[in-house]
Length: 69
Length: 241
Image (spheres, rainbow over the protein chains, first blue to last red):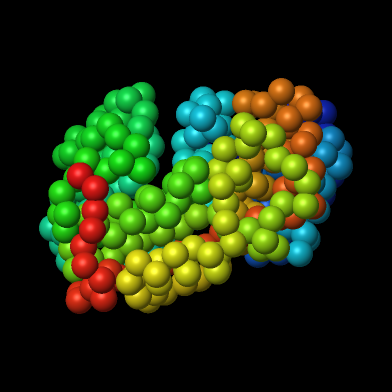
């Protein structure tokens, strides 16, 4: 399955590691479903930046979908 | 037809089918089909399952779409390809050891006709590997647009099992795979932005909202089933050629 990319140049940095964020493949897991996406993350500690529009848009709709009985 | 929409290629890898090839492999493993068995992929689409299975089995892909068969021919060069409708199979009686029908029956306005045809072309003891949408609550509580594809003809699982039993199929395996449907829907949301946006790839805005509302109010499920044609049939073989 192809990886969906949500990476954009960003001025956000990892404060703990003092590193720029880089595109990284991550597995987003919720209620036993796993989605492979590409997000900006710290290459040192793996801290992932989830953009606000992704969190309150697509991710919220996926959560609501998976919570449907 | 929805599964021919290029816009869905990225999010689904070209397979608008819950469970993807992993579910196909599971069903095939459960079937016990021997290497070299004659296997028909009914509604083969662009040939992903054919490509998976063509090294192990003598595969035939059947689809109503010439465009799909052209893609299938590229992916599965060893497969025999036939352009035909599932309701009118141009195949001889008892000519297959197995029939694979993945998310196909729900596209057919006459599923009983399709199942009767499948029964005819299977050898006694042959098996049907079936996966498809099903209605959890009998019917959609809201009307569906007429272009809603496989949702229009999705049936309660009990009705499909009853139809198979009536045709002298023995149900060997039946498993709910609704989680795979949720997974696919989630991928479509990540790819398209929302489920309504997904429907808008092939429906007008009003129909997309209608489809979205119907599915949200009555979420369908997905099942995988393995059925064996009885080796000795209770009734005589009556069929149309």
